[in-house]
Image (tube, rainbow, N blue to C red; front, side, top):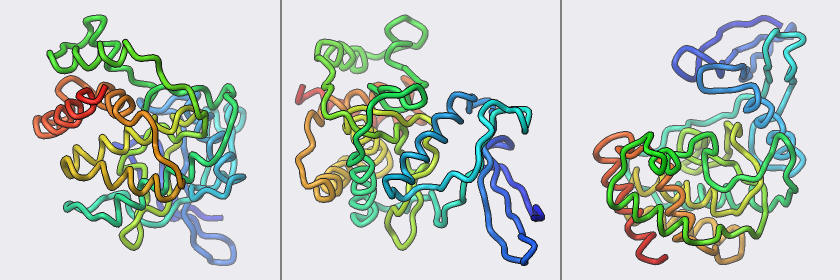
Length: 270
């Protein structure tokens, strides 16, 4: 095989998109993952374990091609997976088809029942490598009256523990692949694990609220409930958990305002 081109998918570092030509002159693309400033060896192992589960379950996700988790061949932990067609850019304007399909995509993930394992541990919040609520609690980040009140409300509630299902762990537009106006696959499973469906549902609803405003989370929920055939439970709790796991000033003043609006709506129901 001949490598035709290599490009970084994140700021000049891993993961890497690689275009390859076979001896038969067919061309295909793969994604190589290796440690970076934002990806640990443990996360590469988690991504690989999650892709193996996804393949067994027939979920729409990259297919794992090879792993070198102990780095014996590559010198560092590494994995190779198929590249997925489509785009991870969501439309600037709200489209119900996109949000319904996103909710349905994570509902399919949640049909998989798993027990915790070393590479796929229990997740009690999205993006488990971050814990911004704890950082505010311990004074390492500033807080606000709203964030403090919301954190106190969440801390006073016992975390719902059932059902326990396979969770993606970081469902935001950049980890979805869109084709034909709808989400057809999920990528980047490095914080996957097992947990309550609300871990993913709250995060995706928060992302939709920040991107499109207050009506958007309802379409995500509708898509999930249609696909799963069940009513989602404890939505206000998981919405609050997701909103609390963001930096105090979020990622822009506009995002912070929408995050806070989403959070107020959640804690009003707790």
